[in-house]
Structures are given as structure tokens and as C-alpha cells.
Image 1: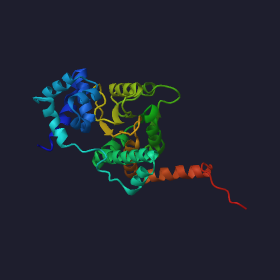
Image 2 (image 1 turned 90 degrees about the vertical axis):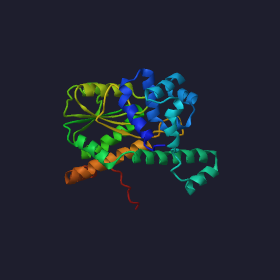
Image 3 (image 1 turned 180 degrees about the vertical axis):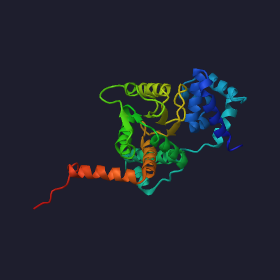
Image 4 (image 1 turned 120 degrees about the vertical axis):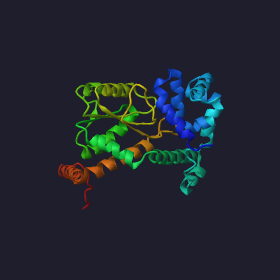
Length: 295
């Protein structure tokens, strides 16, 4: 079995996904986003998880030149590694797990968070983050948008990022829509959009509008394929698998921290001086609480 066959299949799906019918596109996106489950599950379970018919899965296999679904799945089965297998069961996790039912829940969530941080960081190179940072630093204006849970990542990135990147603007502002804020944006600007499945309509529409204006697009998301309607210049994808009903943002936050670190490094002394000026300003205006000495 060629060890690169799985990667080649995923690359081919990414290249052809915009040309597929809606059902085949859904199946292709599932394979790209969930290669582990795809390698593990039988065809009926895969169809259920992907939200398509078994016929669709057979058709996508044929579209890729395979004689059957099983032939398409075979390299994924060979490459299958559980997300959490690479994270050893540390002593403190074992202690929590043996303590109580709640301890089991906490241990499972903790191990999952450690695993997705590892997988989210491993899938990106330093060179990729540097290219993203260069795109941001060279822009006239960097717009940043997200809604709902993803807004927490955007707010943090804006709060610390604007000390490294003076052109950064969190949108929308003042109850406008993101599209309102992008009205005057153009080819010298960048939109950073943060969204995870199920993707926010407002965020996707902002991405489409920005691309129609020639704005460069950076996506921070949970998939290498979000929409066939636009082609981002850069995608930073992080796993958000969780043990509960909500996405786990630990991997996405770690990836965002990596981007901030690269921006800080590339900003040099000018960025460091700007951060010191913020710190001095906050200290001068008593922004931080200081415990009073007891007499």
C-alpha cells in the first residue's frame, strides 16, 4: 500500500470539489474533514454521518477512479490512527478517571483537548504561518470577523494582535453587518474570517463579498474545504472535536497563539515598543487592580 495514497486522494478531492454536484460535494467534504472515521466506518455508517446516500459514496469512489467504495476506503484504513492515541494516559488523567464519574468525564475532555492541540499544531508548518503573517503585515487594512462561539477567538486575536498589527479591525462595529464594513475594501486589504461547522451564514457571505471586491482572504476554521464559492489565499485549519455537544476551541486557540507569536517576531523592535507603550498607558491610568497593603 502506497503510504501517500490517502494524501493524494484528499488533495484530488480538494482540487475537484467545486466541480462536483451538491451531494458528491457533501461526500467529498466529509472524507476530507473526517479521514479517520471514513477509514473506520462501514459504508452505511459513513453515509449516515456524511448525510448522503450509500449510492453517493459509491459514485464518488467511481469518480476518483476506484472500482468500489472499499477500494477508495482502503488507504484510509491503513493510515488510521486514533486522534487521542498519540496522547499517553498520564498519571493525573488516570487519577481523575479512577476518582469518580465526573472524573472520567473530565479526563476524557482533557485528553481530547491535549490531542486536538497537538494535531492542530502539527498540521501547519512555520513557513505557512510566516506566509499568513506576511499577508497580514503587507495589507493596508486587515478586517477580522466572526460570530457566536468563534467570536471569542476573534476578540482575543484582535485584542493582542492589534498591538503587533495596527491595521487590524474587528468587524462588524456599531451593530452594522460585516459587509457594511467591507464596502470600501479592496485588493490591498485582507479579511480574516473565523468559523466552524455549521458555518455561519453571516461569515460566509462576508467572505464571498470580500472576494468579489478583490480582498485577500485568510480562513481560520475546522476544515481545508469550507465553500466552493470562494478560494481563500490561506487556510489555517484546527480540529474542534470534543467529548460534548460543542466544539472544543483549544486547538484553534493554540494555532491563533502561534500566529500571534510569528506576528510579534516579524514586527521586531517597533512592535515591542508599541506593546510597551500600551503597558505604560494602562499602568498610568490604573487599569490593573493592585491589592492594598494591610496596616
